[in-house]
Length: 251
Length: 305
Image (cartoon, rainbow over all chains, first blue to last red; front, side, top):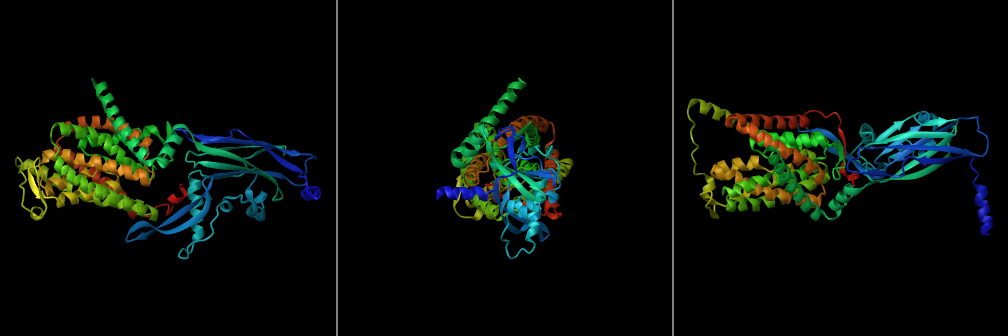
């Protein structure tokens, strides 16, 4: 019975004609005290048993997504002559970082249905369900989120930058900015033909504070009293030390 | 050299922070003010989150006031009794200020609160100082200057009188307590020591002799700032020690240079320049509130776990 079941599964899953094999230039990103962003190179190959199908073009889409977190978007309006935050929209989940790199313009190589299914383009990667009743134009808040994060290089759309040799070897470089949120970053690779995803592959890149940064962050959140006292002590010592060195230099 | 601030979670140039600390240090050394009121807005301008900027200033103020307090204690120019009364008020005020701060932070209005406080207080204090020093300059040109006479005001008719020997005063504890509360609230919300409010209040409202004013206010400020830092550290987790240390090192060196420049300038001139500087900072913040911003939307804190 079990064998029959297994056989049915094997038969139901057609053997993929083209499969992704992936490599990463680094397996994790460490946020150190002098962290100034990071470059990651993703490279890989398309494994196939049969000769290349030339009837349609094979395209590659690579995305890197940071942890998805709820976001509060606020809009300023003029009240009594000054600009203050008035309307609020909670976006249910938005990746803290999101980059899409492709071999060709995204709309040419990915159908809408597939985008909806795999959540590849930036607007699809953001989940925003309910907007409060008093805000009529909630979609403007999501647009603003994309605009602000794109301005900070946190959201990147880079069409045509994936280097794709002989429909077999591909590579793309990503620049992660300095203002990264910690967490597991998900790298996804999609192969498409005629706008349909033919294979996909996922890999996780952990991004973590390390060393002193890790220690200070943990201390500040887990032992806030101790951290506060320590901060005061360090500040006093630093202030004292700097003035002592300065007076010593003057002599 | 870029440095990643562990709590603010932004990467900034270490030399920029040292330079900012130094610049504000020079000014604070020249004018004999804490400089918190200049540093906090400057930190906003370079992209440090307001909550972190305000909370981190506390450590700054404690460290830079300490040597001053010790010097004044040695010279016996601290009215400890008055300082303690101001301090009790200050601790209440700071706690109240942090509650208000956290409440408005949850509502997304903390930037507005901080900026409004700056515009209001800096504007009023700057204008008062400006006209005061204009008058002083005119007076000193005409005659040798007229000493201020101490008046008998409503302050002297309140109950709960107490003797403050060092200040030579016998007044009610209510006005100093209220002054302390006000300064505590400002310390928590604005990330300043509050000397710029307390010193005039002590001279004009309480009638304290000028020679004990600075020492006593520093005594109060150091404890209130330490308390504020602890409150922000335990409720908001927004004290960034790396930021504080960099600003402090620049600040201490700057202050030494500033003190030397300050000695060479006339007191009235210094005051008028300080007044102009205070007015410029408050004007810049007021313009930010009044002119339509280029980006109406902002991303709130809740995505920042």
